[in-house]
Image (cartoon, rainbow, N blue to C red):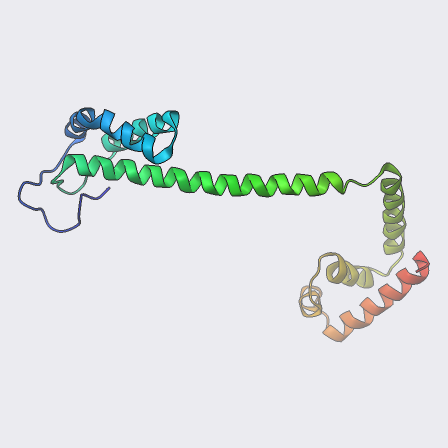
Length: 181
C-alpha cells in the first residue's frame, strides 16, 4: 500500500508500523463503518469490509510515510469497497448468464423419444465412421468434428491440403450413402 501520495516524505509525515495503524484505526473504526454503510447500502457488508480494512492495515503497513492517518485508512477502506462492488457486479453478470442458460436449456430439453432417435443416429454414424479408411476417418474427424481448417488438418496429419480435400469429399459421399441422406 502506498501512502497518501508517492512524493518524498512531507513535513509531518511519519512511517507507521502495525501498532500505529491499529491504534489509528481504532480511533476511526466507527466512522469508517458508517462511511462504508452509506457507500455499500448494507450494514453486514460494511462491517465485513471494515474488518478487512483493519486486517489489511496491520498485515501490510504503509511502506511510505503517511501524513494523514485518517485519510490513509479511508483510502484503504474505499479501495476495498470498490473491489467488492466490482466483484459483486461481475458475479451478478455471471449469475444472470447462468440463469439465462438454464432457462434456455430447460425449455429446449429434448423429449425422451428424441433422445432415443439421436442416440441411434449417433451409433449409426459411429459404425459408418469405423468403416472408413483410417486416413479418411482422421481427416473427417479433424475437419468436421473438431472444426479444424483444411490447412491445419493437413499439417497435423502430414499430408497436403489437396489430400485433405479429396479424402473429406470421399468421407462425406460415403456417409451420405451409408446414412441414406
